[in-house]
Image (cartoon, rainbow, N blue to C red; front, side):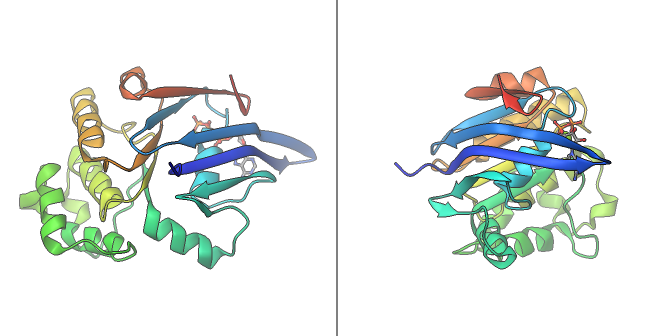
Length: 220
Ligand SMILES: Nc1ncnc2c1ncn2[C@@H]1O[C@H](COP(=O)(O)OP(=O)(O)OP(=O)(O)O)[C@@H](O)[C@H]1O
Ligand SMILES: [Mg+2]
């Protein structure tokens, strides 16, 4: 079975002042279809750095990343953007919504990078699933905090990406909304897809199939 995600021996160093910071040291992670993995660890332990490498938004100083069997690390920005557009949904705590487009148009935009792209019927069904069917024509600025979080989730899942990468998707929502989002994440993950969830929440970590603990850039 081809892993949805295979990260091997990742290292990432940053220069800060005259000092070198090792943000990641020899981190490996493999996700098979259907798996949901939580990444937890203290602030500064390297969680966001790891997610950026997996998404092809940054390149490792050592090691490699493949997504759906295709190389992601050390490719041109174009190749990385295309692979990300086709295979990866990225969900962060800041809004990924384009303000001048309504909610449905935001889903269509994200879905247009997939191959094959989703039909309008599929996008409306996705909005229904996250409880935003009657907000499909709304502008992002008119959504509540919880609605924004669910719209972000729908955008990230538009077109059923093989891999969902989520960086603290429930950090800005109430406890009730967090549980709703968690149920939606589990229910809407495609059967052959996989999810990496960075979180500080024990409820979110408990819902995952596996938990990876990062401390000082290393897997514990
Ligand atoms: N672009 C950068 N330049 C310099 N240092 C960086 C950069 N990005 C991250 N770092 C450093 O790398 C380490 C890991 O940062 P990272 O953002 O991955 O932590 P995190 O686990 O996501 O923390 P948090 O829980 O606060 O979001 C930190 O010491 C951080 O200061
Ligand atoms: Mg972070």
